[in-house]
Amino acid sequence: MPLKPDIAVPEAQDRRVGFALVGIGKLTAEELIPAARTSEHARIAALVSGEADKARGFARALGLGDGDAYTYEQFDELAGRDDVQAVYIVTPNSLHREYATRAARLGKHVLCEKPLGVNAEDARAIVDACREAGVLLMTAYRCQYTPEHWAARDAMQNGTLGEVRLLHSIHAQVEDDPEAWRLKRELAGGGPLPDVGIYSLNTLRFITGQEPEWVFATQHQPEGDPRFREVEASMSALLGFPGGVSATIQTSYAAFKTTSLRAMGEKGSLNMEPAFPYDGLKVQVSSEGGTHEPRFPEYDQFTLEIDHFAQCIRSGDTPWTPGEEGVQDHVVMDALYESARTGQVVRLPTQTRADAFRGTKPKLPQQ
Image 1: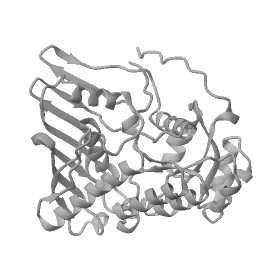
Image 2 (image 1 turned 30 degrees about the vertical axis):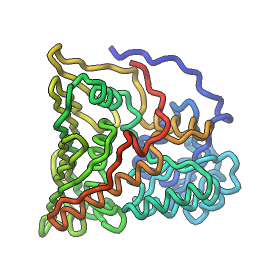
Image 3 (image 1 turned 180 degrees about the vertical axis):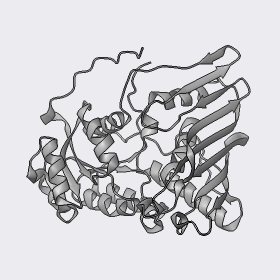
């Protein structure tokens, strides 16, 4: 039987932080809009889409008016909406930079889906634009807001596993449609690595609190498969973290759906499988005393993420996953692609501070 969540009293709708959702695809329709309905601190105030009829249809379904629906050409009209304090950008990766920088110029805080851009240059440009405009920027790394992933992080860092030396993560799925934007380099920036492999990379950085010092990668781009004319089908990577900690990542658009995360220490091991879906996460911590599987109240990952950003907007605190966190993943991914291209180990700038790119710790559902 699931544990009952703590009873919380949501804010009145007119007191919540108003968001404009930019891009109405599957994620927006199936995850973000339902998440807003269970939010305590945020609400949907406007919708932006490339299709006017689609935007108006979703607006009406949410109890909004036709005047709350915008096309991309009308995006700058959000400047006159005082009830829209933030935008959530859910477009193809190549459009993140344009709409994040435009939103910043309008004085709107920016929550942007991962990856932050198509490369580190894009990501830095977004960070710079938001800093110059004096608005907050958060990268939407939902897995850094779940109690299961925090339980994994705690086990890694509180000595439960002893000295951890080996980490491994897989995130793979089959992408069938050769015309999907995720298979277009110009739109996506790469193949499975910036889409699903980034979960493995980001979560390894999160649970260790450290940054890789070097990377080595190989990738496979099969000939004759129309899906992979422009991007890799699979990538395998080795990452070296401080203290001799070795991590491996495998990601693919041509392998059965798999999401897993493992950490092996001297005194115990950690296993998450599944590790990255929107629900049904499982974390097991094994040691000489047995195996423990923590349980948590029911929650929505996107609700936790959106509410954290709304609270940061109110307080002025730096979000836990700010733009700099998104930049760092791009720095590592750019290095992985360089290594795969050259066949060489690529070294990364040394970071001596734990959680070097993170901000204010989020509030989590209690165990």
